[in-house]
Length: 422
Image (cartoon, rainbow, N blue to C red):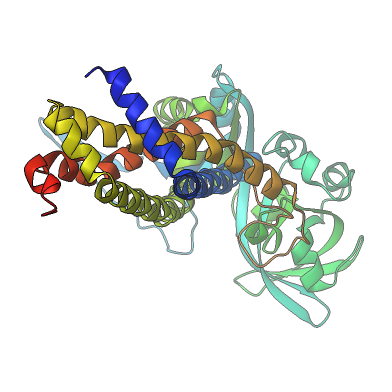
């Protein structure tokens, strides 16, 4: 018996039970559509977080931690194979800084991967507006340099805020949620309270909104000179340098080159935010596994239908075996039936999944600040690879589910069937 003959017999079996075959294929289709949708939504969530991180944070952050030690200033003597020196204790209140930062910035800016280098000083403060208090992280920057980092200008609620900050020494730009907490508007007068309880009056020159709730409700921008004064560090020292590269994919390579060139620790955006990215990817994988069980249920449906067909066609099987049809051919006939059910299911399920993804992507709702990101939609990232994966997996499950009934059919003894013993 040729494969074409086996295919025709399998097709006839399915046509004889149209309703049952259709419902079984529909179960595979629903499983396919749900899996495609889940993959698209999980990928969309992860991609959205990655895009937001790339969009609001420097591609590379250079910290004040040295990886190449400076030559000690306090070397007091040396002999062959040994040196003598005095260790200088640093008070715990003294911040680690990048000293003589203009030279370090000049070295970094000379790298071909680097587009913008922006020095900064961060301060953990309490910010007060009359009777309202809230913690705040103030980032002291040079406005002209920071404008090129993380597309800050496009995130401004007040378009001229950076320009005004540049000529307002005591200016501050608040995250929009932080401004709401403080009930602060344009040109509101606030007070920054340092860890040493010193107070620094500032005036609001604008707001920004990144869509990243943690950043928008806790961070603010001030001038670099003010942040240096708050932290009591020298005017030629900073706590870090933000880098924007020409290509985000070059961030890791740029970080390595900066470390060897400047001698300070440098981290690319994916290293800095590894925990966040891993969290979203892990959640997506868990969701994918759970929804994958829908396919298992569909496979059980295929197996159940194939078992019923085998029991109903046992006399036909006995006649074919009596005519010399091999066991392998009987097995292949029922496996072809499983393959066809799986094929019809995924052919129907793939466009259905695309339709559901399009529908979900079109839904809009009121944005809220309850989660990590502020969004008014579910982000869907649909790829051809996900459709191909689901099609292959769906057919595979259907074929595997038909193996048991097919082997059972091939194992029947024609004599027992014809005698009515089975």
